[in-house]
Each structure stands twice: as C-alpha cells, then as structure tokens.
Length: 102
Image (cartoon, rainbow, N blue to C red):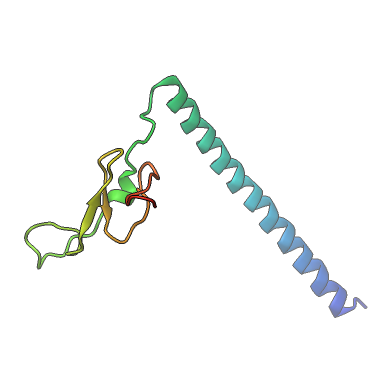
C-alpha cells in the first residue's frame, strides 16, 4: 500500500512545479513587454514618458459636477507638467521631485 504522506508530498510537488511553470511563463511575458516598450522608446515610436491610460482613468463621483479627482488638491510637476496628487513627493510620470529639496 502507498504511504499517504508520500502521496501528499508527490501531489504538492507536482502542484508546485505547475505553479512555477506558469509563473515563469508570466514573467517571460512581462519581460517581453518591457523590452518591446524600450525598443519603441529608443526608436522614437513612443514618447519617453507616455501617459498610462489605465493609471489615469479615475472614477468620477457623480455628486461632484466639476470633475475633479475626488475633491483632492493636485500639484503640477515642474519638469513635465503632469497633474499629481498633493500627497505625492515625486511625479507619477517622470519621477522628478515635486517639492524643492525633495
């Protein structure tokens, strides 16, 4: 008869190998996407600091008619002109400091 402890270890080992295989596949996709973006930036097909549409998509509160970002204050980046939340120390687009000495 098969020892249940060994069977358990074999099943867990197989599941870990499957998870590792899937994780490697996902990481290869991420690295491939990053290389493609870098290639596009170097060739001039993409701006050095292109807006991230998914990040910039902000849910609007229908109670507020002015369309502000949830009523929070914003800071404009002196380097690239992007709007940032007032709590940010660095620009979300170009990563330059938003405050002097920051």
